[in-house]
Length: 387
Image (cartoon, rainbow, N blue to C red; front, side, top):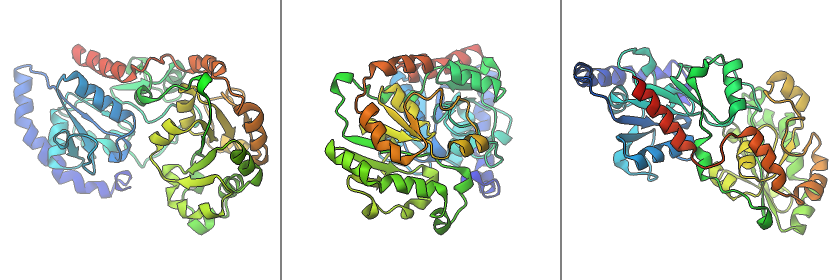
């Protein structure tokens, strides 16, 4: 994506300067007369999609009607009224940025809201990083590809994540707020008495050491071989057929370029690959198989069972690392051997009782009341009131 390339982002400089100049008179007048802006911008995932934490914060702002709210995107879409959308990188987009009271983003200011805007230090709005997922399984990658411009507030899903961001990321406690995860407001909660699983979602995470491989070379990696072994396992297929279940493989977005490597016609019966919307898959699936994906937190919050298939556990923990103690802190059965998965499903997952997950959820989440988006907006409002 071009937003992750510093050189190609230079094309936004003319629009950035024009937007700043056009907003300048209004900003000067606001400063002189001490009038506060009531304009908010929200974006997520590099300006693509409308399904993550940004979506729920955006809808909460619209519901409260406390000011004008815009969805920042690269492609105008039918998910919300066009009058509430603005293209990233346009003169209008930069004008709105410099006139805003606050902006909310999941990944970074530069990718989700206004490329290069952090280089102008005047008339900046509050920056609220609402994150993409729950921190815990994977240590943060240090990268120079994206401008890690500091935010004024970082939301945290729980006390454990707040400790990570303070101890490891060195963010001051006064910039951290435990709000919960915005998109969890839309997650259904599994009821034990109604657990009749029909769909298993298999969603392995990406590995940066495989990312630059060609499709031909990727097929030679241990990652491909392990995923493919599971998807072609006849014992797993027999179990799925016995219980009238289906397993769908969903690749991480960073691995979508390797989708051609996985041919459903060669998979065992009742196993397929999909590129369907991740949020819909999370909502509609009953069981998750993963390794270190933050999607597992979504399932825990929903009281749905998780099986951890960590075929490269030693290598992954050595190269990438985790904030958790693995396997001790896992909230589901785990294995490093794909051959054991049918047995674990049969003897542990299918005899699932959600009551045992409630303690695990309460351990990792401070809130389960579906008011996370409201807390995020209220935390922003409190900051604005202090100005």
